[in-house]
Image (cartoon, rainbow, N blue to C red; front, side, top):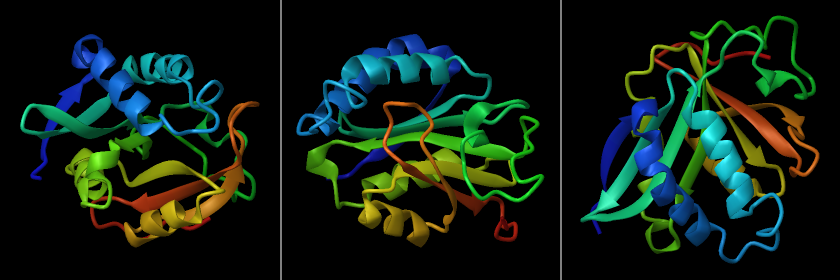
Length: 185
């Protein structure tokens, strides 16, 4: 299996929508919560919301002509609600202006390509060349192995949040970009 990443922006969102939804469905087929927070409909709402943001960036990994997975995100703009419910942040940490933080909203890899390095490949391609000083993501706090993987990728936990009433408790994580120092709290 060889996965080749291809980059897309918000102008491709409509043509990518069904593909990303199908990858989501494969990834969450065994989820206990696939009728709730992990449902196709709920993910479609998030996808539509994120893919229309200025600066939305998406990397889809292809193995031949089959999508193995994707990663996407966008810069956090001023007054972004991303940090609103995160506990324990120091003053000024959540200040955003559209150039400070790139939020990695989703990383999904179909089961057949898991544990092959595909997630890391897609993630690194998504962040390659980003001008922001840091990247952030949220990880389900009930998945310590996934959080440990993100720590291997250079992320540090900065707090906990439940961004939506039906969401699990998440760990907010941050990592520096472009060779910058590790962000503090």
